[in-house]
Amino acid sequence: MLPDARWFQLLRQFTVRDLRQRWLGSFSGGLWALLQPLAMLAIYAVVFVEILKARLPERVGSEFVPFLVCALWPWTAFAEALNRAVNVFPEHAGLLSKVPLPREVLVLAPVCSAFLVHGIGFAAVLVVLALVGQPLHPAGIPQALAGFLLLFAFATGLALALASLQVFVRDLGQTLGQFLTLWFFLSPVFYAPEMLPPALAPWFALNPMAGFLDAIRAPLLGLPATGVETLLMPLLFAAAALAAGRWIFRRLERHLEDFL
View 1 (cartoon, rainbow, N blue to C red):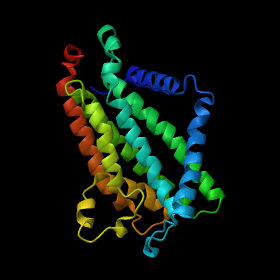
View 2 (cartoon, rainbow, N blue to C red):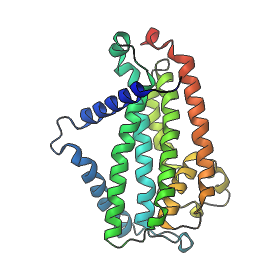
View 3 (cartoon, rainbow, N blue to C red):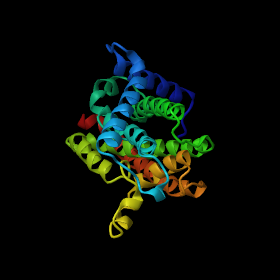
């Protein structure tokens, strides 16, 4: 059944609720969503550029800080979306037993919240980079936005599957954080694929996040791998994740209340 107006209204309400709970009691409120990425940008610039003297190969054609930023914030949105969505059903067990509502809304709300917060932070950091003279390509924003939306779809599919499975495999939430840490270092966030040893490069190319990060980073920095074809693999991975996640969710949905 396709979502109707009530479905989207519930999604908006739960997303707003998730945002309010995140900033409730915070001195700076939602302003922290902008201050945090700017503070992180300053720290990374000092640590990696000034202290560690991190440099990219000349053939990459980018400075280290913008290269890092254009992958780190999308990854952060993705990882936080999964970490916050995996435990939604145990957290809302009482609500599920009392109120009839589309349960996928509970999963999608933290995913939307994470991508909204970090999407705003990402945009703020890009503006700061442009103001300080870092080379960015505004013409690549539409393609990068398409890559970001495909990453959102990929995260949504994984979140539906993980949230459903976590009800039956209770330690999934704890192991997910460790797996995401490993996945982070296996993804080209701090390094370019061109820096990998030739023997490892084909294996790293199988990592879905490599395609998503490249689809976002390449057009913003004007890197050689720019073009609509860059979105092909992310599109396939996002479609597969959505189909698999929805199938797993539908198979397990009827049994959720029995195991909560």
